Image (tube, rainbow, N blue to C red; front, side, top):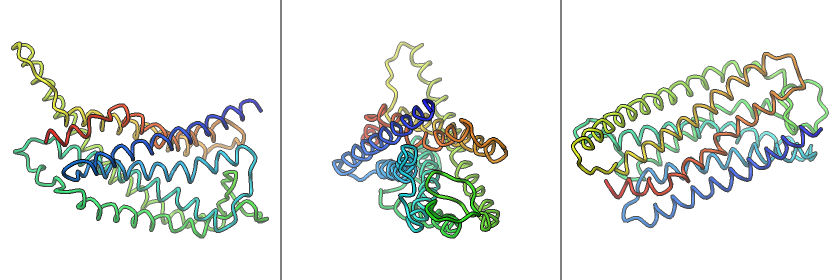
Amino acid sequence: MVLNFIMEVIFFFMTVFGTLGNISVSVNNMISWCGGPEKKPIHIILMHLAFTNIMILLAKGWPKTLADFGLRNFLDDIGCKILIYLQRVARGVSICTSSLLTVVQAIIISPRASGWRRLRPKSAWHILPIFSFFWILNALLAMNLIHSVTSTSLNISQFMSEDGYCYFMLEIQKTKWIVLPLMVLRDAVFQGAMGAASGYMVLLLHKHHQHVLHLQNSKLLYRTPPELRAAQSVLLLMLCFVFFYWADCAFSLILSLSLAEKSLMPNVQKFLALGYATFSPVVLIHRDGLLPECWHAQ
């Protein structure tokens, strides 16, 4: 009983902390985007990432908190379908946006003579069609949830995967084997791009570190460019994403194969599912001044 109360408090804290953190990130980048002489793509990408994180927290964190505190059956069938659908879409868009952020940052810090510089977005408006593609793609991949989710307030016996306020119906679970490979393909493509861009940034940062050591040995003063410090911030953000994503996948797999119904495992899995949306703003707030400086340095 005490343990359940502690978990309820933790989920409530994560939801509030994450929502406020993402709002702060969004407002800060909106001010930098609107106040600058030129609209920079990096700001709009970060605003979009914060928005998707807020959607995840509002669609998953708040209902989970209400259910934990005893407020069940507060959603009808339509409300449940909309809520779970938004959770799935927002999670997918967050994965795609995180990958886009890494790729754009890698292009920014690439040498001027590199061919990658030609792929750099000329303005923030060139990013908007990419966002539209992300939303359409993930909206289509989540369409099966409209038919497979229903509210716990309905008295139907053929359910599985209870989440406190919504159920997944057993007889339509077979459709997941059509959607699941497409979701795996999406994650593989975008995480592959994220990994390649991150590796490229690590290589460039290593070369820069060797250059700094050479200058220090030559007793010359050298200051790290803001765009490279911003790249370090993005790499740290991607490490945060990779940790929570793969830990969530691992615990979800363990739960699907486990026969134990009452354990800490479901709570740990839900903690990991909210982890990236909750703690990623900490990385961005910590390095808050670096990203705007990056663009002024360009």
